[in-house]
Image (cartoon, rainbow, N blue to C red; front, side, top):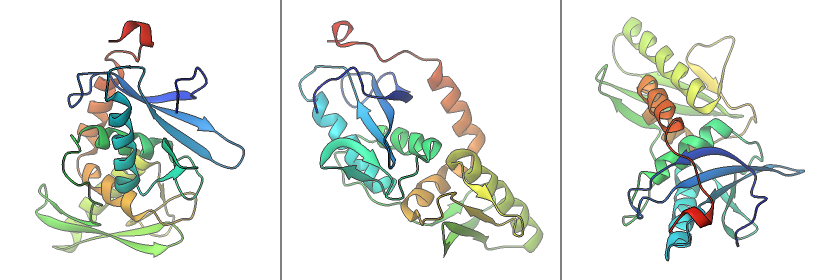
Length: 213
């Protein structure tokens, strides 16, 4: 895909890519008639920049369960067609943290929570609903599960359910196992993630090609 002025609205920025010459890279949202699409983009014309963006986009298909649009290597969407914008921003940021020299793998739906020393697991119940479980004492388990549920709601714009405090759901009603596995890691310490996002938002801008080398 060539450079174009109509690439959508930027929703996330990595001002310096530590794995490729500190170039600035961004994630753009494009609204279509049937769905929402995302473009991983850089204005840098350095040799290899295009390949770096394509690698990040490919990593997003694995980490977030996204798919390429019409074979375009940097244009993505969720299979459900819904934006899940906040979750996509997290997928993009996590992909940018990888040098991508090693294979990218889907994150599991179970993780050791070092804060409580318990294994926390997300169980898909269908229709986009997930139940969070953990081993350990019931009361302590309940408190930690509620905290993780809150983290998933903040990071992925998921929804709580009225009847179950350990349930969380996607508004689209579709299953997103890879995405939940990725978000689960960060939901354990959502405050640190939100601080990271605030700091990132204050650093740099994605500049035009004439300003980059």
